[in-house]
Amino acid sequence: MRSRYSAFAVQDAGYLLRTWHPSTRPASIELDPRVRWVGLRIVGRTGGSMLETTGTVEFSATYRAGGKLRSQDENSAFVRENGQWYYLGSV
Image (cartoon, rainbow, N blue to C red; front, side, top):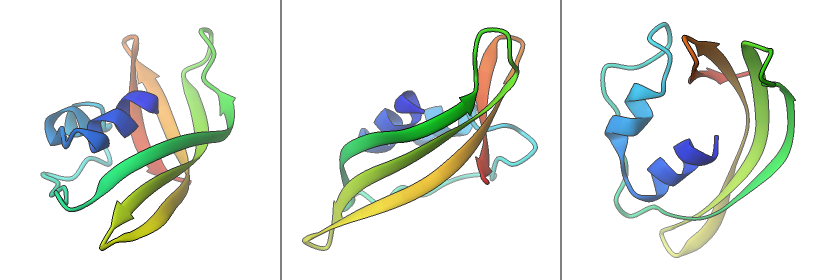
């Protein structure tokens, strides 16, 4: 989750697509260069241990857009395949 947040912060769409599971990944994404990500708070998680292949991460990400401070709150689902974690989507 933290690496995907960092990818949003540095506008790395390629990384976001590579870490998005093929079953839910869009063909492309457009990142708004006017959005500045300024903070990430992990609220909670389920699963995701070394012995598990699924997990969720609930987070609140803060960003600045149009001169206003806003947040995106989500509970994200992830799956591990061949040792790699992939984002599935919001649950």
